[in-house]
Image (cartoon, rainbow, N blue to C red; front, side):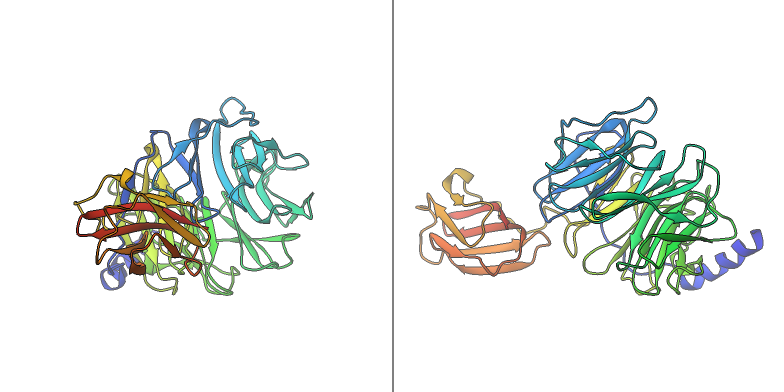
Length: 420
């Protein structure tokens, strides 16, 4: 083991992560509790679950988060934590609690939850849902290792895990599918579980000789996959597979002297792959990013351990972690808003959210010669511009959150807009 690390250290001097990393900006969460899981079912709606039963929700794409006062979840002593969330629509989602307080479903945006019955798992964590009626919940038995329950057309059945372990600590913590047949799951035992028949049968494959507890798994394409793990301060690179999960090795391109625990994996809509965790050597958090080419990685140091990453668009990604920590790779203040802002009551825009026609009211100060309107995406891209009128047509604008900026010789007004 020591010889291997010395060889890796030498390689790092030549091929370490050298490209420019993304910048990350903190977002107020309103809590200091540990945040465990984040999910964005749409461009505007997102959810965060954490320790001590905390559930946060955003309705503006992640700029502000508010705690939900929800009902229907029974927490057992010592299992008061939300460990995973998976929403298939803005309102329909699933939650694992505990790690041994059960699994729950909501159909009204997290306000009320109903316990899921018919599961064989005692400890619950990993989830993957294709839709409301088809998906998987992974975990472990009370006196058994890895178990996976499968939801088929609304009915639960137990999948077969070949050569599973018999230690209840070895829970299935993450699941991902490439298509309807091919999927991977990560176990705390250090085994990757692999299916090629839609999740009915799972084979167990060691991710490494060290058999470190796995934390996460993600499938990039038909051959490329990654797995994260905890390493007790000795981790170098992520685990990588080039053959669809059949064999695994350390990814030297993601190796650093941070010796991190890789706690999460996520791929955003533009193909960027993220991994969040901690830096054992610096007592801080770290976020890795890659274009998903199986080669290059960059990393950024952040203040606290990152436990999960999610995104609601091709480019905007959020990381969440210890001490109520939320970061985003977008500087909300960098969109060029003028300091010569008119009072917001000078203008009313409606309807908001808008589908097609956007109307403006109380526009006297803005109805001057050469007044014009600009619409920016939340990444700062100018997506629409025209002379200012009391009504504009936005049917070609994609769904999402935007900033509407109206400029005139009397000043400017900037308002937030949601496009359905």
